[in-house]
Length: 130
Image 1 (tube, rainbow, N blue to C red):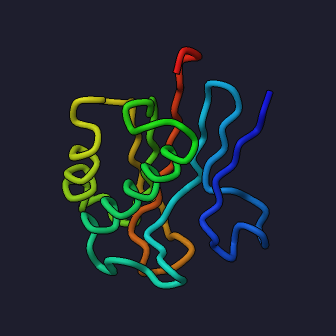
Image 2: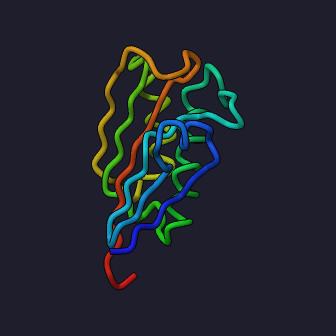
């Protein structure tokens, strides 16, 4: 099967050895995505802003692979402060209210930068007719 990848230009992609998103056949996997923009944290201290930023990044990666948010079947949210769940959830709901993929939100001790509040992974499925 053909392997299609999306890269965002992050310096970590080459040093760690990963891509933002990968499509093989009818499946797309999106790597853990944070609110990093040009080496800086976007929306520092803002759980809603970071979540929305991340979901826009995921949406763009899906688009580059011929998919959309409507193809997402699972999201995983790793958050550093679960007490802010409503803010993460509000942004998630703006993208997925009508799609309703399965979703997980868990609190983690830390992310790669202390200003990052959330990291999101996504899985998508594209029917062969698309």
